[in-house]
Length: 618
Image: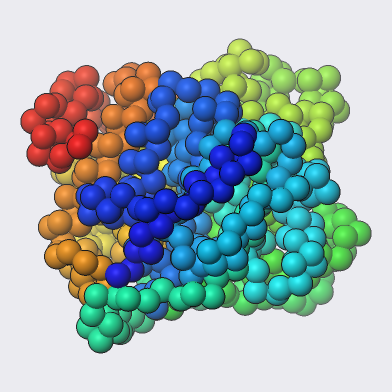
């Protein structure tokens, strides 16, 4: 079957590595990856524990289809209690690390405790060893990757590591694999650093075999790949422009949060768009975009590989910044650019490289800089506070310097590394933090896309677009078109997207596949690979079970109905331009209906009937 039925338990305090069987009863209920690891986390830690204490656990996990030939089946997740929010955190990444772990014969790795000194885990098929990492501590992601490749003399070794930002306490630090793919949100890298765990290096040659019905699996995956190729989004838009295809689209509909959400449209959007990335520069006549790229088994290839102008003021004398590396995706371009008012494409690319090199979530970083810029604009922050940094909206120099300081954990960068909620509270204006549950929300303004407001407010890991991408329906018309300015029907839309996404994340597939696939297209692939009978209805129920499990974890951690809200700006300050002009987000009209559809009480707690129906607690 597609599960290896093996997990690796690494006790960093004791220095032990122990294999154990996967709980297959749980796998049948929670699938794998996000769902199954969340079940393990909820069963093994106190939800009230300090996220950065040895009591927290960090789980690297694959899905049942990870490592197979199903399109986009290269995903893995990192599940823990997040330090940025205090909520359950599941951060998903592509690249090749997940498939390598699965090919080494493991469904997941559970890290517990804390090492006395820096270590890394080396996995080669059934062999796993904790090794010293003193020489790696203080190194960037890129330096660590190069050093481990030299040490092990294996170009096919896959490495996930943290950078200096995590070591210096950045609460939105990421875990970066394959140099520029990342488990990027909620601060999973900070948890890894708190355990003195620098890296995980994996080499797997066993393959993923023993599928339930190999011939039917090949037939179902071939049919599914055809659907991806025929879709205008997955077959054309994403390969050509990446997620940056959205920049001009979202700007035109008046839902592009600009200058810390004080506006909904950005006059410099065209200059930092996917189209601009493909155009030759006036200086060196090369485009920003070098090529697209795909993760393991992916037939979409939405990834960006970019170069920067060597003569630009932002460029250091480090040769790695002259070549090609992970380029801007929409969320990063928005946070680093639109939200800060910066329309310098090379400056954004350089700042994004810094986020990759030192392991920072560009969404939270850019949004925190934007909040700092608003604080600076009104005088709540001064040059004395920032160490001389002039944080003016639109300043590419300020953005780049802030990125350098935060990556190194120096000066004002240490404060930026705590996120906008803590920064704004410290300087007396908590209302400037565009967060939910402490996590910065991404590139869709809830006033212009009403469903995304409910999505942010109810997201279990804090504000997130990848928990319920109603933009697909409200803007792109997939699978059906809904009015982005209406609230009617949005509670049901959000719930459905949340449950579907939870299932897809847990199977090991990329959520972008759902631009072309429904669960009815995914179920035959899983059913042919895994034991048990899998259909769309069962997958949807599994997604609902996972969502409620995460909710119960957060409730036990101390979250309540009051945390299902949006920043005051989104609820009280109307959009000033565009189709949503004069509108705020009408969360109050959607939230009660959402609770009712979920089978929760008026206080947002799953009822006993809902828990019985979903088998929670079992």
